[in-house]
Image (tube, helix red, strand yellow):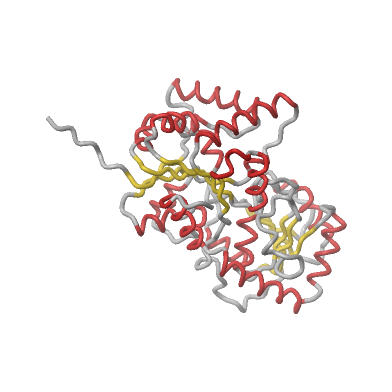
Length: 382
């Protein structure tokens, strides 16, 4: 009897929480957080995906994996969540694919046990999209040594790393030289067909702050709004609670992409009323604020952001030309600069037009897809 082996999928994506609900909903939404999945799906038939699941209460093995993940996070300061992705079902699915695209380094680290097995038997190729991997802070020499050990194992095991920040990509090539041929830079891109103003004549008078990641300066943005009572602010975040709001000029919306508290259409309406998007962040190699900044620019909203080492591409963006950089992340500096730029509508419009043009030309999700396709399928050098 002849045993027929099942045909391997060309590509299997690994997503975080929440993608399957969106994919099955058939609703219209921006495609940037699917990292080319729909473009691959439209061009090729055999494209699949898996995603993080909450498996903690299902089996004893998952509770064991949860414990292991907690220990690994504690000793390495890296984002291990093995229990959310390392299941037998996922093992079989990834075993039966030619190329794995892992859309976040957290998922990549969590899949490391599987990836090591696949590497040993050379059954597929793996790619990890990286954003802020080198920003994981350690507090002592031992923790730093353990982290480097795991990162070296990670870089050894995975075939390709696609950095979304040029700064982090350059730093990786210096800090981990022997793996530099595995490192590629592809800028994070957005769905510019979705993020465009529908009604250009809507009055724009609000200052918006959007975001949930750990690098945002939440207390600072709260103080900024209190110091500027003459302006209306809209906060879209789950990290600031109602009882923490310090002034009456703030409208607060609980926002989380994974939980879909606000739809992309509702977020688009918020952008449509904004005159300025502010992104105060902590200094690190994580490209914090990247998606919000690009969405803002695409929606004709100029961006003011902290100048950090992790800003994604300082060769393209220039202060007072297509973006506003804040060098000193202090309350006085932010308040002074906000007042300054909002006092000149002509200058604000000039910066807005330039930033929108750059996003349309260089940060369209179709460009990200074409770049991924070359790297993943053709394995050209980056």
